[in-house]
Length: 88
Image (cartoon, rainbow, N blue to C red; front, side, top):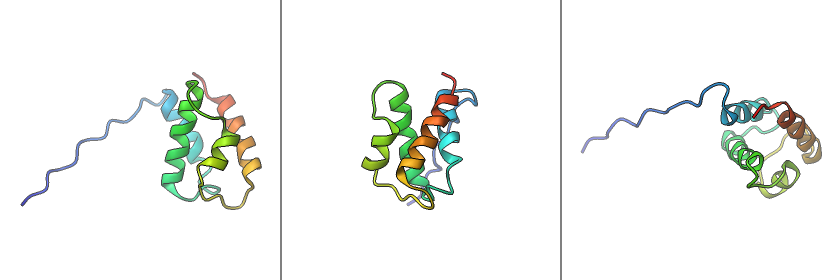
């Protein structure tokens, strides 16, 4: 039995909305140490900016992610500031 090579991963363009959100959330890796938590939060924030999801204050409570060195309210403020800087 053999294993096939994985499919190539297509990166988002650097100026795309998705890439901007994922980079912004990755900048908070000291506060959100688990990579999968950051990916899940990024996806939810992408949906929020497209009018489909919850705002950051709600996401921090519902995502049950591990937050380290900062309170949830402080992180929500930082996320809102980061979202204001993202260009659609």
